[in-house]
Length: 328
Ligand SMILES: [Zn+2]
Image (cartoon, rainbow, N blue to C red):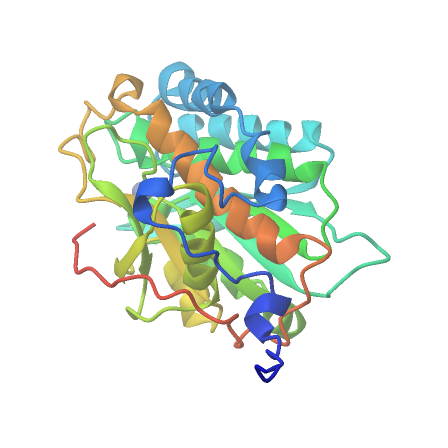
């Protein structure tokens, strides 16, 4: 008679991060058999045409959104308005910085989805994207695409029960040295920093002419964010790799001790920072896949049946994504 061996549950299971082994060939989106019911709550609600409309408004109707200009301010008002329509708590944060002898006034947009009051882990996660662009470029990929996906995830998640506070952020002045994200992080209190579990940063998430999806950490190490996205990518898309790059809005969060990663497609498209960074160069499929992967990862940690991480520095049991030294 075979002896019964009890298999002890792992924290991986408790966190719902256990990945059903599937071969890469089985992975198709979104009918992938490994897509969990909770992923489908996100994946089936994502509407890529809404992402496209946001990008069109920002990159075509407004155009260049250089920090401190009317273009950037128009983007700020549009974004704040979109978040408000979702019933989120919205504020516009003003900040100044020097560029040569000029003082530039720029703005961040902060939209908060509070945790359900009876199920509140006390934790915060951030979803961020810069809304400014370089001079002379409509910045469709860089970074109207990131704002478009951010706004769509805010729409989808705004109706769902979550037990973790989600802050949707868009930053000004990224192109002049991560000015908005640095300012935002500098305004977080010790108490808020302690409650901060991680930050997902979108930067250039839809160019048809860029390479494959990748996530970048500042130190080239995996963390809570990459573990969540490695896991969700297996379920709703295809296995993700990660690499080491700072110099985007995840950097100030990392510097403050918050697990963070930038999500992008690399290597970069040839239109990067050019007047040719226009909406026709974007791929609906890439925008959609990005929303699936990060949306499912955010929901995994924020939904109310996922136990809270004990603190910001404890990662769930990792799915090991391969490291790739790919330039952004
Ligand atoms: Zn950018």
